[in-house]
Length: 485
Image (tube, rainbow, N blue to C red; front, side, top):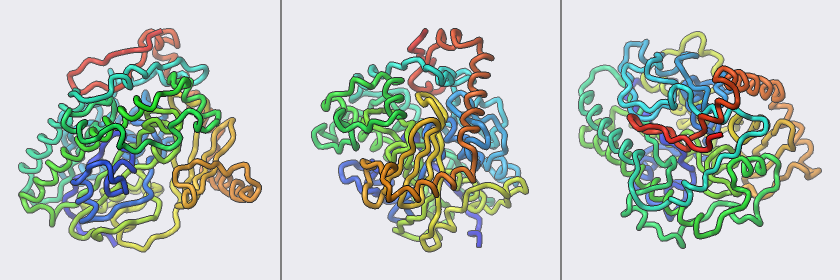
């Protein structure tokens, strides 16, 4: 049974590791506003991205489809209005649906489905990170500079998120008395690098008190070909000293608290205007951040620090202070938004893989399996994950698979794939994956599309001359290219 139509604020952050949130068990980081949201709503303990990198994750979230279905493989294959999104469905039903902040689609010139885009952030030059499309013998991308600069200060991202929060407050005030339900898609950039946070928040987190991520020490790195390839691609193979990792982690904690403050500004406006009883709120992130785990910074992997995301929903009819263990993922957002505002799905949405989060929150926990995939920078082959609430299976094209028991090994320190007692389980997971897709064929499609994109740009030499960039610039900020060939 669908919930009655109400307003919806969907809040998306960028690169927020699930476990660096107070309500997810981290007592060191201060996230009081997200914690309060979870206390008056439902928190999903096993939520995952469908691709641990920005552009594919956001395309999957918009369309409710998996990356291999829409072929948004990497940060140079952005969403540009097709397939139709939940934004389109809501707008086409005659309801107001506006976006504020980062979208990371191709550009505002496309019909992305919103009634209005307010100061959007889209991919660089409508092209994005084509540097990452070079999959065979990929060029090294030097990222040490951003790590060395981590610490207190200000950034264009912090300023942008402040404007987005202010824009959201003004928007809510303007629409507080609307008779029809509305949707506001509010997307912050924090805690995406650069690793900079306001000085007063940096001071909250002494570096010697932060919690370091699993397998941060070089001696403990997993010796898997895929992880070794990531470390080579990003020039991380030499490792990092503990002081640097602690400073970056303390800065990231400050960035998460800064994000929480922005969210708090918006949620307090709902309370002030007595809108909490007519407005549902959902919060999640597009993916996580490795923060030194396994010798990596950034996202990219299927380990939980990268692939797991926080996901909280709240509203007048949402169970309070509930924790759901049913596995869910970002493709569940599509049907959830339609349910929230009472919009019927279109015929072509019948085969979407997601389920309404409002229904999942109201029901008893159940068995489910979620799926994620990766086809982008630093990966020699496609990576595919299945997680069933206990076991995580990761299939690597051309490399050995992994299996983790997250009941017994929540930090994913012990790969069980080679143990004979798990052979049947490995076979069953691979068969389940192959019922969904042919991983080798999907890998071939991704690489074919990426090679074509590189050729259309003028070939590898032209791509290397352009170089890469660490972060998409805020609106009206020029991109800063690095690693030029």
